[in-house]
Image (cartoon, rainbow, N blue to C red; front, side, top):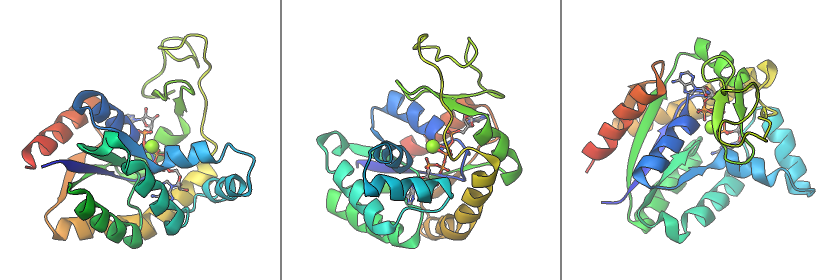
Length: 218
Ligand code: AP5
Ligand code: MG
């Protein structure tokens, strides 16, 4: 049966890193609500300004808008065989919406928690850089590019840092995660759909576990 792979985890846990590997190797599209909102907030519109304020404060975008964005994106033809959700759902209302959506679309849900202790997350977030062209994710401590601050794949392109990857916003993102999103783990656990992987290891070892889980969940 076709699947929706839900990648769960705290800010900086490695959801995006694993989603990109899954996309490349399983041929399923990565649907990252964070990436979609970051693209939306670049416009010169009242909505963009609203998103900038919310995201820079480490709070959540309202459920109604988030649901609309996910519904629209996942109704595209490339999602027919299933897809990877990176950063969604994050609230009980989003979880309920996803149950309904998965039913309508005929996909099975598989949730994977990339488990990393909170104490390791700040260095991951504040050290993160990304390529604005291809989205490749780097880290000045853990995965530096070959040439300082330059994408390995796009040598003319300077890497960027996210506006919310500063210690202050990161603190609030962790509070938001603990309050609104962590309780959802129980929900998926109770229905036997939550798989935990140790996210403190090398990304390749984490990916191997996730791939096994995805293959086994028929
Ligand atoms: P979003 O973009 O989803 O941010 P997040 O959940 O805080 O997660 P991150 O993207 O920071 O971390 P990640 O787990 O993807 O880690 P990554 O692989 O990059 O959301 C941003 C904002 O958008 C939210 O705060 C909210 O405002 C809004 N939003 C988004 N979705 C929403 C929703 N559903 N509802 C409402 N609002 C929503 O890795 C991090 C770093 O660590 C990288 O530098 C990487 O190289 C490194 N790294 C990765 N894996 C490893 C490893 N195994 N070992 C060492 N380093 C590693
Ligand atoms: Mg991410």
